[in-house]
Length: 239
Image 1 (tube, one colour):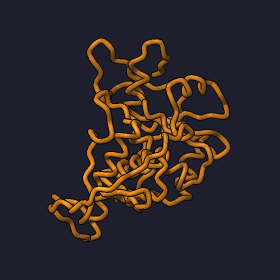
Image 2 (cartoon, rainbow, N blue to C red):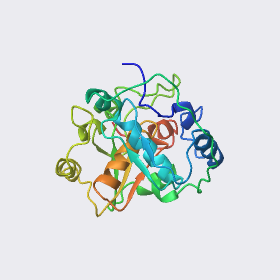
Image 3 (tube, rainbow, N blue to C red):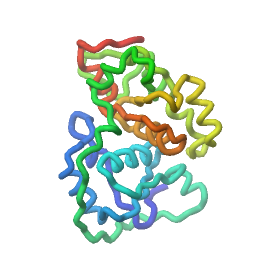
Image 4 (cartoon, rainbow, N blue to C red):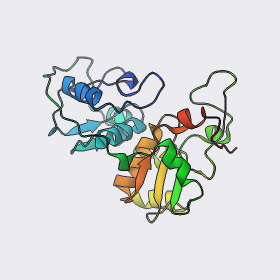
């Protein structure tokens, strides 16, 4: 079904990712994006997309830059449609603003170096939220150049497909079910959780679940994810 929620501003991946599929952490670029979207520092931003992961990823990114009031539309666009709410194909009327982004918060991200330091540390747990086929190295989300393919996962990473956190309608599962899902894999609140996927989007919404739905105090998103790790031949890989 064509259309968007009335008043919604459109962002696509090129607004948020660099050409190498890494997240754009340039504060000036973020300021320009939010300003031309009509968003001020005091705006309530509600993120959604066709897949629930989109909202959680945008939530994480805006929090990295210090936006105060960010929310996720539970179930995204598909749930909105299923409940009979209206869509429109009319573009919104936007009044540009001035936005002041904070410097990126390093405590919400995990760099490649930080992930390397975390290998073998019992107080940190790596969470691979990709599909089973990606985790095992059978399939690539982003097919690398021929001859550089390295499938698999970061050594020691616990696998929990991000889709397991969702109900069939795309909404988040109840808190008790989420606690059981993550605790059952050793991802507990007393450890620092570092989530990753292919480009940091699916792991961004896993970050949202762990940090905001379950209240874990220490959660990071490795936004470089497999797109970065797999291309560096000196880094270890497991299958």
